[in-house]
Image 1 (spheres, one colour):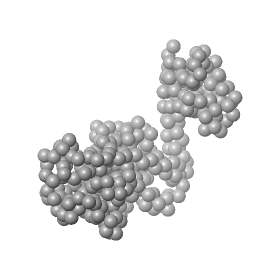
Image 2 (cartoon, one colour):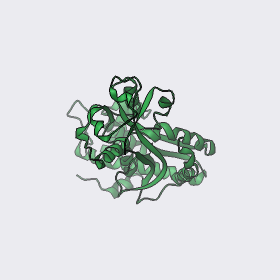
Image 3 (cartoon, one colour):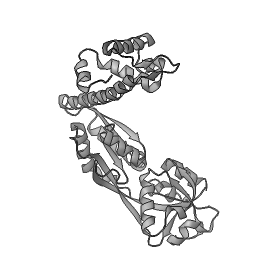
Image 4 (cartoon, one colour):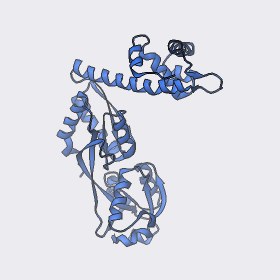
Length: 318
């Protein structure tokens, strides 16, 4: 039995959005008790909401023949549409609040590791001073995950360090960065004693790299390929999921790394890390503001974009 989109919208008059929220939580947590806790309801109330949905549609939504909480095919369908309805409703309320209250509401922004950890917190502080009634939810993930979040509508805006999914996103450069090769000053390798090396010497260095979805690694890898150095030739000793993890691994003398200069600025100034120049290798990149290319922006998103453009020059780190 199929559930029609138009029928679900019509049925919003019959049951409120809370029941949909409860149903989604039950499916995603696999537990009535956990869903009750997340929705601040009692477990009997949660069970009652599910029962009302099943009675209305005259079809079971939860498979009660297993010990685990699993959706039936109809339940999977309702879960998919319910998530979409709840997301649309959240967007609607956020936009309505922006019209009603002027500059008021919530804005979801994603940041890849470098802008998310080292740039956006300072920008958001200044933004909050100017627009105290706009609450920002900042999610930090790698470039690919942030881009996917914006495309799916889970985030209104993002700031990332590489161009991914270019046909679905609009890109505006907001500031620059340089990716440099660094090593601990006391690393037990002859490379640590050199001021400059050639590209041909890079495969001799134990390297710590970011994961494949990282903008830092995408940019580094593409630049090295243009110089004839394939990733397969590199001596990778560790692949880590965050810039901070890479930074700590370099500090622990695990190896060298191509990393954002912004992230290690303090380590270089304190003399803990040493920058190794690579002849004929300069890895510069933009950080991009991204938003969907085929979707109207919410008023709050436009406010943030205008603010970002005004303050973009101060985002550059000396």
